[in-house]
Length: 356
Ligand code: CP3
Image (cartoon, rainbow, N blue to C red; front, side, top):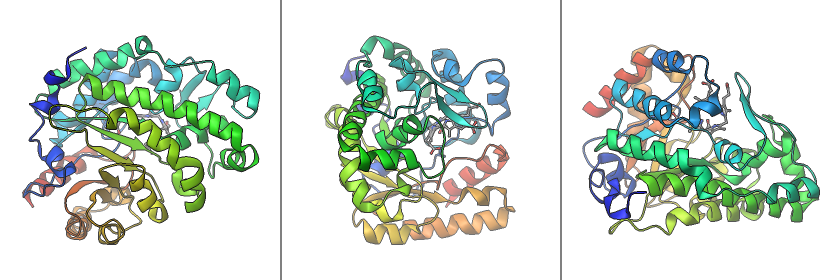
């Protein structure tokens, strides 16, 4: 493993527009990347993935490197996001999980009882199991040069929403029942998830990622009180290993994002992150008023990517204008790139944003 003084954040990426913005410095260049920029919207991705299952692809450093680089080459975005999935650390810890195309993560056995959680807690994520992740990040960051790599992980609640339900669900009822009906079992499940997903994030940063994003995609289904009591402490714990790292004079910028989380923005900031990602529902000036002094990321409505260019451009202009209310703003979508998106629209949007 490279020593931390060879880390990109202490040299190659320290002055990248994305990193400067994450650290609160506004410049004339609007940094932009897109959640789910790597993946099904790209024909070159679909070609590479033929015959390889999603989770197998995530454990092949050559494939991960190529897939992560594809959108950077094509669109000229300001960051790469590590090609992986939030359930990869579960698979690496030996949990029976698969990603079913068109559906999402599915568990062999849902985790519902005290015995299920106790069995899960017998498992841990050792450094050895993370070797394919570290190898992919090292290879990738060599190729990326001055373009920062963003590492990511799923937050404990979003992972629990899959584990307890056994697969994708709409309102995550089973997980929300467990937190109230079996609070001790819930605490043990969330504590274990914080360790495993935190180790996954730490491995990426340690190996060369210049920033880290925690996705709590489904936290928006929680009340603010439940979020603060049953979820926030574990997201904080998942971020702790990365927040403790020092690379030269730098700490590693961290971003926290969820969907439908307008009522949770301050609580999500308070788990201890530098940047808050905002979905398309909350205008950025409103988010900035709730989070004074906090760097924001977002929030072009993914639905607009299929609109005619003048409609998309007008919307992007409004996002830039509203984003001026924050100390710095990294442009992104309000959620992931829809698979049916015409990739040329993303290239054009990136170019336009860079000219503003
Ligand atoms: O470009 C990037 O953003 C990096 C790659 C990335 C993937 N998953 C690749 C992927 C990231 C950051 C994720 C995170 C992820 N995975 C989240 C949080 C982000 C979000 O979208 O809210 C969640 C909730 C998951 C769980 C998950 N994995 C879902 C819901 C799906 C889609 C299932 C489907 O087929 O519709 C996946 C699979 C997945 N993860 C794909 C990709 C490219 C599609 C797999 C394929 O190509 O067949």
